[in-house]
Amino acid sequence: MILSGSEIKKQLGTNIKIEPYCDDQLNPNSYNLTLHDELLVYEEIILDMKRPNRFRRLTIPEEGMVLQPNQLYLGRTIEHTETHNYVPMLEGRSSIGRLGLFVHVTAGFGDVGFCGFWTLEMFAVQPVRIYPGVQVCQIFYHSVDGDVTEYQSGKYQHNTDIQPSLLFKELGIRDDNQMRLEFEDGNRDA
Image (cartoon, rainbow, N blue to C red; front, side, top):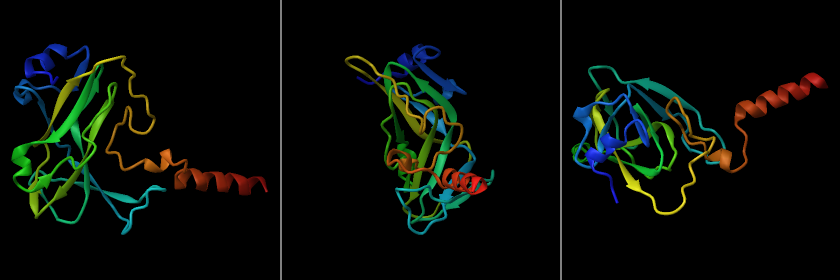
């Protein structure tokens, strides 16, 4: 079952937290989230699942920025959310999709207990101008049957920024900085 807009509002401050919250962004069965002014783009030609990939930051100016096709852009919501006892789900808004901008390409299925900003996987079919603060996606909530075990992963929980893929952590691979520091420490002892 999906929560209605009025039920989302009723659950605010207990099972659902959305900060900042604005009544104008509440829909009949979802809440619109807005786009932060920063993006990440990978600098690698070939992305590797088993290691961290280099990226650079871009700032979306007030006059907007044109996203190009064949480039993955990682953004994030302005809103910080926290959800207990419901499954948070994220989808792009249809008005944005009709411009050929896929806002949340995959991984729209959240976990009970998730707390943080939502990283958006953005891909443009054709060049499209985006703006900071635009209502770019919507969050909605499903009820859960059975015992609830809350999300506790150290990868994305309690994030404070855009999150590039951290899949390498699942694969038991340490990031390059960890390996570099351990190598330097080892050489000092020699």
